[in-house]
Image 1 (tube, rainbow, N blue to C red):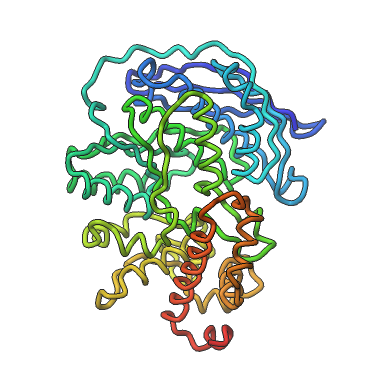
Image 2: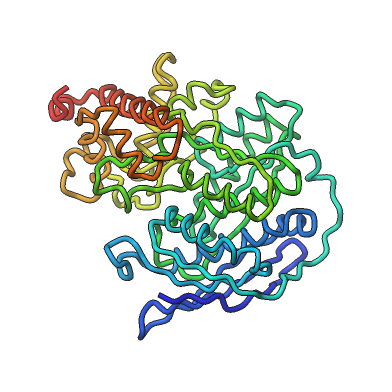
Length: 451
């Protein structure tokens, strides 16, 4: 389907609310066109204009445009195979000529990230005219930029840095979609808690609002590109590195079955995607280090090794890992739970808290889950139980190292010299999930597992 970026315009609502609107036209069929747009609330990012890399701002515009297209086109209606969509996009950027030489790199990265087929062409547009901002000392002295989603892993990443670097200053890069308010609430509440303990050790900046006008697709695979682009702006100003705090199990997202390689294989922090992003910004001349120090740790190992685990356990319930918390009609046991209990992010969280607190009497997971395992087991054949049964069938398999290695190569990791480290990660992830099932100790499920 053909997509065109139509117009950039600034909406100056107040000195504290400056918004950039980017118009987008999508010809989803011969008969139908979707007109959409994306709004970027520029405060406080606009402060860094003329202070940060111009390429980093173009990456922000690019990421917001891709997100708006991703959200506007429903996969169920417009996919070519039940999942993947085809996009032929003319993307207007102020410094479009720098991107023309890396169109192939951009298309490869986007296709890997979202599972779609992208053909992006870059065309020119006028430079975005920002209002003037007064100089400020608020952003001086930033020594690291962390992605901050409001989940447990980004919370651990923040705690680890501020505990281990008391003289450092952390910027927490975050954004939210005003049509999906949950993450903003999580980020805000966690920042309040962090501020009470780590005052003056991080920039307490509100999350950046990036909202598309059309929201027909909820998978949002492109979302992480906006986190990285916001982080890139700040890091290029501060001349520091970016850390992506995400456990290796979720980053790698090893498919539970061959049928889940594409549609269920989220790649928002996958090692291949991060390598692709690093290559692109290097070609654009942005020399910023980007790393995920947790990429070879399970989620449970992140909890276990947290630099201040006592504090983590005090505040962890405020973080949220759930991918489906808004669908309370499918929370059969606890309707008002904070987590659904049936998506894979919930499974990984529950398993992590068991591993990370196994030496603490009575455990320490005060997360509330909407569904127990036996409820999901009894819902076999229903969509709500799909992830649960995919997981336990995966755990029943006797996988060899060679089989795991082969699957990782299929997933794009054949060129990694440390491939065996990721094989080990998959093995430990399976052990962590299995320990969770055993800890649940339901005789019916254990019998089903032949344990």
